[in-house]
Image (tube, rainbow, N blue to C red; front, side, top):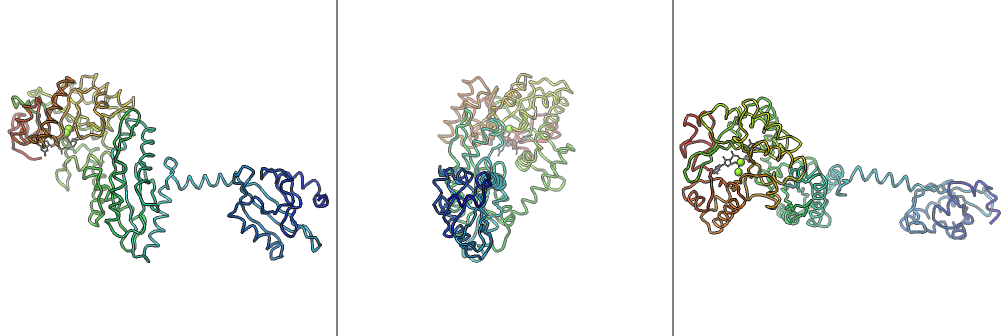
Length: 558
Ligand code: C2E
Ligand code: MG
Ligand code: MG
């Protein structure tokens, strides 16, 4: 063995690069300390063993091939990246260069230089993973998704089956994120990702597309029913309570389904599924919709509305209509609810359902809300003959960082309006406020003397106890319950909630009263106030003033 070491002298032993001297059969005649160290072993454990000893099983074949090529003289030198398993079973990546050290002499000797590149490989893998996988959920990201989908679409043309895409958007995610904080939001996304993975078939790809959007690629699909069935199972899997930051959240997803028909691109298929998802949201969330070609027009419409709305908010061309809220006993107008409308130059009068959601997505709702508040205060100032209150709807995004308190003050200020004249309606989801900033903002608004009312009570998402942590003065029972007045179940709920309002010392309003019998029921159940078409529809200011701010019942336009 001494002779082998002499081939290279001290260089061999002191080299920081691992080195081994091999005989013609690939056995190690000598190794330097660096090589032994790389494998986490002593030199004596390696000498006499095959060079392939401790090689990762998957790399054995390539290793043998390189040895054969160099020893047969096909190539003077072999290079290869390979994996070893060290003394602890960990993978060690190495770059190996093998060359002959003797020239035509016998016995022939070969020298392997073995460089540890594990750190480099790890860094590279990490970068690759970062570029293709979502950090939070570990799912493929948008880039990898498009790549896989394009691959699936290439393959499907020759198959009898097709490829489908499910676009899943978490409902009300911004509420959780804004109110319970980013950490809670992230935790919720991780749980939803796991639930989606549990619901799909083994080979399906689930990717994270945007903040609260997940996309599922379904290959080998027979038809749309098969895709819808998987969408149903995702929807069911996601819909179960999650404890988050002291609250209980019941997540739902809206899902759009699109199927590849003929030749289509990955981007186009995702866009179609997104369009169908938007329809599912508009239909009231927690729904599944299948893409149809006529929906493309709707998507274009939405984009057009968004840019027009931006201009409308900027130029102040939105209008506010007012709907009476009456005292159930006397039917006298006790207050008005301000409801925003948009007189669109080409589309006519648009109702909030057609643009509030778009304004939220486009970050316009805070300025829209500020505009409505100023309009309402101007209205109050213009009508000294009316001394009741005006209820104004406030979107969650107006609270907290958007500084609702400042907006309210600046609306009241110019006319020195008594804050008691203003009442702000916040939905149950909007009340699920736990960030300090949001809670503080609401407390500051209440401290001004502006009362807060819980809107659409009973439609929500959160536990009553969470909602009641906020300083509320009253609640409005959602129209869904008014519709059920007269049914035994509906009556029981209505009287129970009326009792709850009395117990809590807050006032109660029933929304959406359309008939005399609903009016009588609400009154006998103990409700204070009512609102609905029976007493008057929302009217523009000029029509309202023509009737002395007390519109005759049943006249009107919505
Ligand atoms: P909401 O606050 O629950 O308002 C009540 C909605 O029910 C109004 O619809 C009203 O026209 C309708 N309504 C009232 N009585 C009846 C009835 O007897 N029968 C039926 N079928 N409907 C009745 P609208 O004006 O379309 O507003 C829809 C929603 O848009 C509002 O629901 C509110 O959440 C939101 N919204 C309205 N204005 C604003 C605003 O200025 N800012 C924000 N952020 N949201 C607004
Ligand atoms: Mg309202
Ligand atoms: Mg309501």
